[in-house]
Length: 438
Image 1 (cartoon, rainbow, N blue to C red):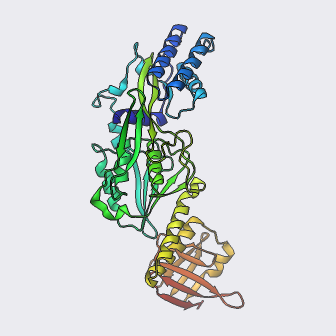
Image 2 (tube, one colour):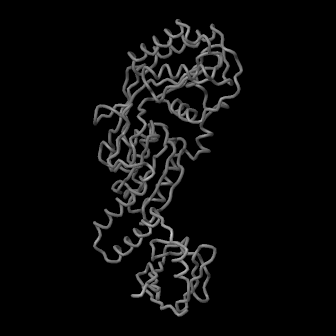
Image 3 (spheres, rainbow, N blue to C red):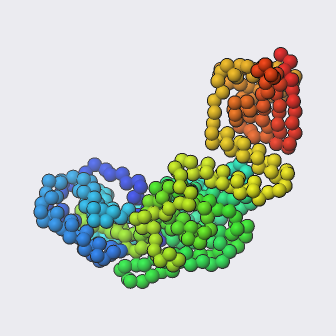
């Protein structure tokens, strides 16, 4: 499939900004627009029987005068989109009015020269090919967030490679596709290849116009051999759509990843855009995905996660699942200590608490060479001769230095409830106890 066609629809759909209306629609213009849309659908729409129903719907409404009172082009584009969606709610289909494209005749911009001023690749590069964030989480867990699948063999492949190199020695990888829009099948293949040891037939695309099916096989990339067996977790929600769903669906059907979050948006169609008339443009789904494994796809139904949970809890859930796996697989005392240390930090981050003012003031005092002061509602720690820094709670009795993870302070009470000592726990397994002196 032509990459540019896919990129065009997925760049502009989420960020359409309409200018002030520049034309007043008359009956002739509206009739021309409706008839042109009807013909484009009949010639191209992925489901020919649905195309007939859509065409009949808008032609009937035109004939019955239901569009007579509409003079605003933006309003007309919205009404037409809703009417087409009333027959079949295709998330890839859109009627758009763009006053910058006031052209007298239909024009198919899917063949537009990529070097023209409307070339979308500049915007793709500025968006870092859809790669939004890469980092290492506690427990040496890799995290990669994508907003779009916009990297291909020409643009962005090396960026993907660099991001994956950064996380190639982690214990597990979380790929965050919450709110991730579409992109190209080629990007899906490129990314999938890093996580598979051999070439796998993950997806097909059937083109209604040519009655042909294109097979998509992954091409394993041997650069990071460890990644082919690395535990993989993918986060999704109802805004995960199109090409990102293709990646999720493929990984799910071969049991390569654990999918966590909410059911995705359900868009499995390839799309191109075509000018209609008088500044109107139609985004036309013309192909559909078919899994060679399930013989179906995620269109309308979305991809359902193995672990269904609110998307705002998906990352926390994935981290906890990874820690559970690592703890169950380890017998090394030092490794277990570090895992439990990081797990406590993770729980504190995901479940923040507040310690009341009275308790913080009770903790304040001098414990040998360790001094704790209450200032402006916060507790600060300073070891004599060392810098002072703020503490933040991990539990009602344990705090850590804000911005660091290498030690924790536990405030210990005696039998009468008086805080009489502190225990300092270090990440190298040391424990130091200091009695209250003031």
